[in-house]
Each structure stands twice: as structure tokens, then as C-alpha cells.
Length: 220
Length: 81
Image (cartoon, rainbow over all chains, first blue to last red; front, side):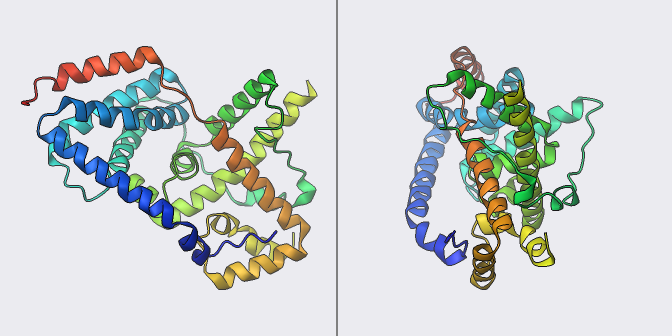
């Protein structure tokens, strides 16, 4: 296995990533300053940098392209409306995702009859080992098989959509958007411990769901 | 799954994310060498995360990109330059 999960390993591996993040923050600060000075080009550059991750986030949280578009539009409208008061205490990207998360949560509250479920850890304890026989395919198993890949994408999207929203938000921010635990906690205004708990359960839930749907699809 | 497996099962996501102290990591490393069930559990979770990452990136629809810019221009286009 040899896969040490220590904090020390992370610090050594992470120096390049930290430099990249600092460079990104510097660029964001320049863009914000230019926007505050009235530059439309700076606004376009901010949109260009963040529209894709925000769209993908909205799509995974809301499940529909139209809802994701509404989320992005509302996020950018609010962001540019209040950007003059943005003091840079957090990164621009994190601030945008905070606005987007709140927008998604507001959209959900408007929908009736969608209960906020819990994902109990006990559901996964009994089938955690090899005997459970989870079958998780690789994305690159058959690069030429576009049909298979389309089916796999459908399975993954359906599985993510099956996650109760509070778990879906954490999984998206942590595993798909790459925010760390502390950043995710700040974006969602929950504790780092709650982030860790929800992420662990979300991953276990997805493993079970993807494996079951993949087996079903193969049996057809 | 025995008591020791269950104890590490609860921390396996933190292990994947390298959020645990060195001492706990060493204990989990040692356990993984001995326990095929926990190795399988770890591997299948890692595969799940990787699969979701690889399959999740979509392009923003071109029609929407244009509409978004038109809306933003209408709202903020009158900014002083």
C-alpha cells in the first residue's frame, strides 16, 4: 500500500500548490482593484475564470442545466453588486462559492417535498471490507467506448444527485472543486468536524450507489 | 470487520486526505499491510473519488455564456471608467 496519509507528506507535496494559490490570489486582487476602478475587462476576466467551476458546481447541486445557469447568473450579479465592499478577507473564489452555495440552498427551500435526509454511518459499517465486493469502474477502462462512458457518466450523475443536499454540497466542494476542509467549513458556515463527517459519509454512499448502478447496467 | 478495522474505517477519509497525525497514520499503514479487507475498502473509496472527479467536468453552454454577459453588461456596463 505504502500510501502514507501524514500531514508531513502533505506539506512537502504542497509547496508548488501553495505558490500557485498565492499567484491566483494576487491575480484576483488585481482584477478586483481594476473592477472597482470601472474596468469592464476585469469583470469579463473574473467571469471567464470562474464561470466553469461555478457552472459545474451548480449543475451537480441542482441537477439541471437551467438551475445551474440561474445559480451562476445570480452569483455573479450579487458578487459584482457587492464587490466594492469586498475587503479580501477570503479568496475571491471562496467568496463566489459561498454566494453560489447560499443560492443553491435558497433554490432548494423553494421546492417543496424534498426532505433533508441523514446518511447514517452504520449503513456502511457491515459492508466495508472486501467481502462486500464493490465494483468501481475506471473512467479510462475503455477510452474508445463512448457509449460505455456516457452510461458511466449517467450513473455517476445519478448517484451524486441521490445524495442528500448537505452531503452533496460538501462532496462537491471538497472532492470536485478541491477546497480544503477549513475552506469548505467557511463557505458552508459549518464546523470542520461536520465537513469531515459529511464527506466521509458522502464517499461511502457514492461508492455503494455507483457500484450498485454499475452492476445493474452491466446485467442488462 | 473486527474492532480495529472499524476504528480505522471511521478515519479512512481523513487518511486519504492526509489530515491525520503521523502517529495515527503509521498505525493505519501497519494495519493496511495486514488487512486485505481494509486495503480493499481504501482502494475502492479512492477509485470512487477519482471516478467522480474525472466524469464531472462539463463546458458552460455557449448560448448561456452570451446571455450571462449581456445581463452583466446591462447591469454593470454604466460603471465609470
